[in-house]
Image 1 (tube, rainbow, N blue to C red):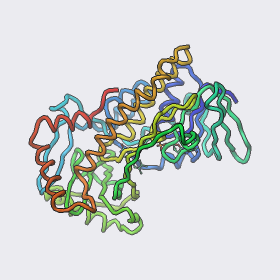
Image 2: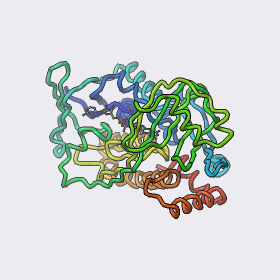
Image 3: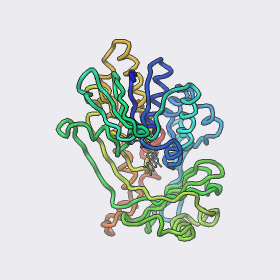
Image 4: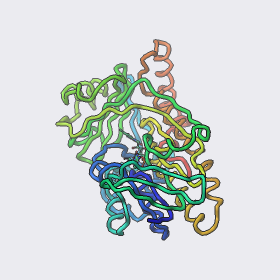
Length: 388
Ligand SMILES: Cc1cc2nc3c(=O)[nH]c(=O)nc-3n(C[C@H](O)[C@H](O)[C@H](O)COP(=O)(O)OP(=O)(O)OC[C@H]3O[C@@H](n4cnc5c(N)ncnc54)[C@H](O)[C@@H]3O)c2cc1C
């Protein structure tokens, strides 16, 4: 088999890239280690910046998102018993769209199937070769049969644990990492959200986030310890703990119900540089991870893909400038998102080693934030989207 672009991974980055390339007449195949159902079953991000919304429109898959997505004009931050609104619309003229990553994945998969484009699910032992030459190859096994794909370019969209970044010689890549000393226990439930927009709660018992996927489906998180396990938490224990971390009004109006998903996510900041190695381009979580506090992970994946699609379209038309500047263009935005996500995480979580001084300083910073137009505007500008 021969294609112009071999895409590894059918998460949002790989699927969106495949769709943008298809619309530009560039042929690509996607290889995915998991089954379609497994990919669709992963509950992850849900807050979309306008840049991501525009990109999904450009890819021709925005119709259901506009119909079912929720427009949010701000967030609430709760600390010390009181809730404070950060009004994005007033401060920046922009909002965000709440639409689940699972739904974006489904829309992209459906568009791909409708166009008859090739995706190989359950591709085993995917390996990439010769990406330091002009003739890279990808090998894999499907149903026990070994296959080879010759291509011009490999797009590594295979997430943090993927094979692409791991195939780059260690001396060619530098990494920077921060692992946070806590995780997020998340619950998805078919209950109406406690508030129409997100509430970020900073509490002595730990951080909590009230989020949602629709008007009838809620996503809640509580900060937990690193060695905790989701199985240890009954639904009742989860709702009790969440309620303790909310303001009085939210605690009173919280509607609880059976969980339909419960999992723990570790919080990590990670960046690999550069994002291009010869004919291999990394995009999304394959190159960088941010803690979900700033709602940036999916949005960063989408913006990498936007830059990469544009660069590859020019490359196949004979102009290499975009591929040569891909890494530097993306990394500037990546580091701004890393900084913002790290800052939001530090502002709102209870750190195990925090003493009374650290706690008071955190309270003072929150107090300053909600009293300062400039500070609220800075938060709002970063949250609603960083320019491409
Ligand atoms: C538990 C969890 C919760 C999250 N919550 C949020 C959130 O609330 N807000 C937010 O903004 N972000 C969140 N994120 C981050 C966000 O979901 C990611 O940034 C986003 O999924 C990145 O998309 P991606 O396509 O780059 O990577 P992924 O979605 O990870 O997709 C990579 C794909 O590559 C496949 N793959 C891996 N290895 C191979 C291989 N060897 N061969 C073939 N295929 C392979 C994987 O199966 C996967 O389908 C969360 C992430 C996790 C893990």
